[in-house]
Length: 458
Length: 174
Image (tube, rainbow over all chains, first blue to last red; front, side, top):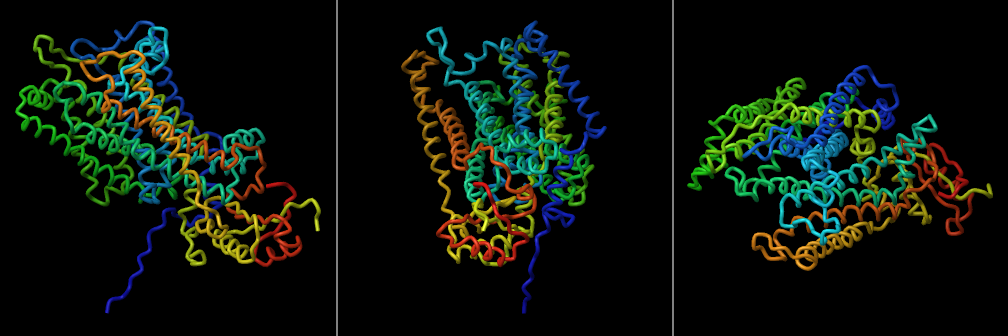
């Protein structure tokens, strides 16, 4: 005779919180003065950002000659950073949209911060295509179908670079709207808690009069679900189109059909690593350990390990196809990638992306916060190098050995890269101070006490 | 009773309590009942007889608009307004137009969905919160006074009998 065993799921929120505790805990960082730790981080971030923007000013004055680009390396850190930041953004949409559609309730602890990260990462990414034009004030009609006095001369709709403009701007707009929609009930919570009249007014304007009526929740949840449904294919399309920038060209190492899935998986991999990096810090600094629990972190580590192996599979497949194609240029591109002058960057990428995340096979390590922080930083480095490897190794030795060259980024390249990190962390730190970093209404909704067992409604 | 009152609000402290109360208002046949909760209480749509949201229609119409706009924009600029031969490709290079068709469909579909949702919810508005705890940890059930709902006294005493923490009159239009 077998006994029926009722397995209870572990609580998504620990510490036996009441609804009021949740509002208090999550709103506390917004309603108190910044800590010294926060001020220190913010100062560093703003300094890096300002330095980067000063160098961008110099770039506009002097031209993109201050970068390390030469023949045949026409693309360098600008596109590497662009692809890197767009990739970082992908985890946010994946967590907010795809995990929502799959009803993965553990996402509620991290989705707000991850979506914020998406938006800030896309802002950082957008800086690069704009400044790489050298004269961005003219970029309106270079990049967009803007009616002009030259015919009008339209943009080339057959170019993947133009698809990119549409893909990234759509991605940014939809992510921002989705994020704002999710924020509305929480902004109302912050409004209703506010004591200072000015604060009440500002959050009141942002909450737009939300009251939580049942008829509003009905429309709101429907709209939220639809936006999740639209964002899920959108996020896959964005990195697919980014990969077309490479795959549609005829450069060995770029001209491959594996690029779209390879880029999307890499983006999810790097994005989750960045979410882990940020969450480890913010759950510590803002005392959110009951909401962003070790279980949530462990789930993210599993995704990092899985996508890390998928990325490793893509690296192997590229080599296999190069050999199997019988194309000597393709084969040389890959041999040169692993054993040429940039072998150091290739092996950095392999070790960081395919070897180090394997520690997550062991449960104890998946639940070790310090270790996952270190691994996530390595993954970020590895994924930055992946883009470096793709861009640089395919370009620096082209079809004509006489024009081969070694690409070295200049100080200006690095300064703007540093500036983009400064911009990202400045925005993220401001977000942590001004908006609830955990989705209050969604967390309340997944509490066990909110799940009805009366059967009255059936 | 109070002549200036529009209705009466009963406050509850759990989603279960308000859901049960909402079902009782349905059994009694009260009209125009609304609840205000800090998070969506599932089952409430049935208890308040709320119909399936019409929001998806806006997504469909606006998405179709984006789909058509992308076709019109790309075909008109590439094949009509100033046709340019790019690498011998046809002026209407349909496969190359697909990415932008997809992006504009999603963009207009998403923006239209959100705009229409705000329109349905009557937002933005400048109404005052009914009670600040309704976005925190309290759940409110509102019953308007009307001839269909019976006398004001009977509504009030009915709500008192539902086990609410507190029942109070509402003097403004909700």
